[in-house]
Image (cartoon, rainbow, N blue to C red; front, top):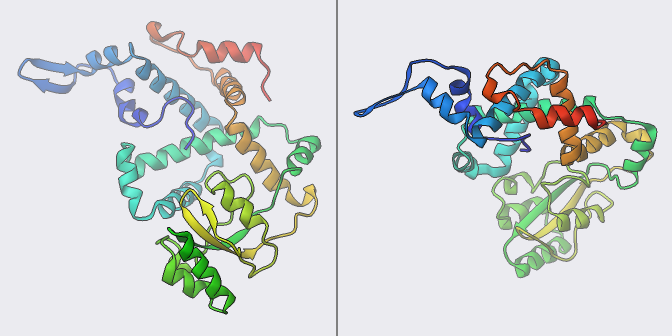
Amino acid sequence: MKKWLVGVAGVFLSLTLAACGSSAVATTNGGKITQSQYYSSMKETSNGKQILQQMILNKVLEKNYGSKVKDSQVNKLFNQYKSQYGSQFSAVLQQQGLTNATFKSQIRDNLLLEQAVRANTNFSDSALQKQFKSFQPKITVNAILVSKKSTAETVISQLKDGKSFASLAKKYSTDTNTKNKGGRLPAFDNTSSSVDSAFKKAAYKLDKKGDYTTTPVKTQYGYQVIQMVNHPAKGTYKDHTSALKDQIVTAEMSDSTTLHNIVAKVLRKGDVDIKDNQLKDILASYITTESSTSSK
């Protein structure tokens, strides 16, 4: 997930930065460490400052766009990641220092930022038509993943002999998430970053339902055989307005300059007042940037 400034650490230190008192964070035989001491130490570090920046942004985003992000959206994305990583999902979360709850929190933060980008993006006809030039509609495919080229060639040979793709997926595919589902993958478009580029290129060459690749497709995961399920016609840009807007927003989310300017604009409108004098300038680069740089 794309984060504005800092990711995982924020969820663990948010309570510490929000509270400043004499209660002990830890005790030792040499004395205790209080919340005040910990806070004073953390605010001197770059990581501590980044965490506070992230917390401030999240508060402002929640106020302005919280009603636009539903729990169902968060859960849908969470389940997509869970399905994508399969049995490795828990291990991946653990490696990142996350739990299910904190990962959902990050997903929500990202969706809030996406709403801010959407609200500050100009979807003019010219912008939509420009995006449409490279646009390809979402397609749905089945795929069989194997480790050896010769195995993929065997699969293709058996498809030519009339064997069903679903039966071959179950027999040969090493993708445990899809092999018992006929090899079905989630729909994707030409901008999907989670799909291997060689895979996308081969898939989009298949036009009709049931068409399959007649040579093995080498990807970063191994060798794959792809079968087309649904390849909609491209039509006109007006037929895909919603999808084109989504692609533009996705591109803006990946552009650091645009994202910086939008964050600055959001913060400037957030009536932020830093109470700690030592942290007064924590947002200076963003507030100053917004006043001198126009946002989209």
